[in-house]
Image 1 (cartoon, helix red, strand yellow):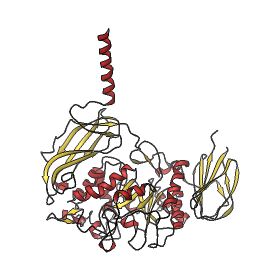
Image 2 (image 1 turned 90 degrees about the horizontal axis):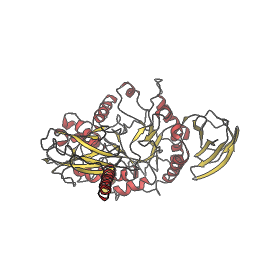
Image 3 (image 1 turned 135 degrees about the vertical axis):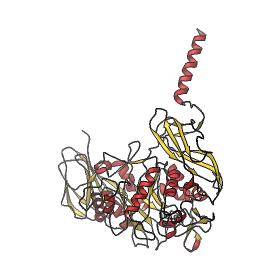
Image 4 (image 1 turned 30 degrees about the vertical axis):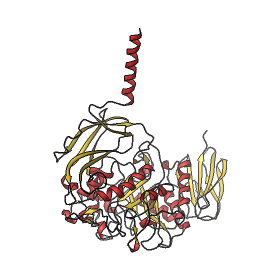
Length: 551
């Protein structure tokens, strides 16, 4: 009897152990939570700055879940010595498990014999986590205008801008004094997204550069984008992306630009015969497995040197999509003179959202730009994609936008059914929007935008809503609203107006007023019915929320 109990206990222990940690056929090379980023190092041919592994060495791994599905083909990249050195034999693959259990390396392919087949048959173990995952379009949102996370949750997005903060320099070739990790952590307290270039741009580092020229020397010229410098990306861009992941802050990477010919020429790739494929594959390999990464191909793609046509941008977009293993958000930054170019509507699909640039102070204008872009003003039907005004209002002397301008316009973007991004601009090409060193005491709208974003996340089912004013009457022409018909309504106001009427559908409704400037919430009624009359106060940004009480 004792022997039988012992055998039974061993069987139970083995069964539990098998369930907790699935066994690999070969070696378990790493483990991590679902939607974490697991990095695996491989040893390949030693490379020097004079060589071009991003172009000449093909390397990929196919990861397959133990159940047989899903399966991801993830490209690898040369990373010098793996510690920021510019010579070495380290090739890395970054993988994001989307499901618990064992993930097998079923294929390891390369045109380099040292890499081909290496670690094939090994595995990664994915453990449970509470990470919300990738940003994907919510297919059930009205007109597919809102994002959701892989786990089905929703967070509203206001973003900030630090164009060249990874270089650590500002005007006069002086160190800015910023710290990449501190900037990221500071932004994450206020915003949900940070857009930044992955080069020095106007304020390059005097010695550290993102690329190598043909002689192996460091250079800012993106025409050498087929020769990425592992030190730059390891120490600067990786630091930003990794820290942003830890804070669940979107790292919106600008791949060309914003301003100088050196940084904008990454897609021109003149020193590689005009082929940007190695660069785009490198970016996809290095950052495409991060759930918090978004990609912007170019800033103001058609108005600065070099500029790019819509056809070229679409080609770049399709190219990088071939190498992205996950649904990474991808778009391009438009010019201020037009909304999203209608030429893109005639080209093969590549982007999952559309970016506009209109610097506005007014609630109604900010809302209408978002809605008109989504609708497609050429009358060809809605584009059915999220829309983001990524230069809605830079606060500061540079553009002359006040704190109130920034707050009002961002409320307007929300009411237009989209998202928006700000920045602090103390002067022309100066301020936090270029060199970082995030400081909310200067970017004073930041705390108001944080407050509004938290109000939205905690109280409003925005992903069910779209622009609509149908239940309201006797309101100012400059007000805007959204609805989830029969369930929830919002109205945004920017000036005093008496006698506004909400003609509520059947049922009892709770009405709350949120003054975004004062950061004050006031409950107006918990039993509103039928014709409900109210007044808007003397404030530039007020949100009225109507939600039907549960029966």
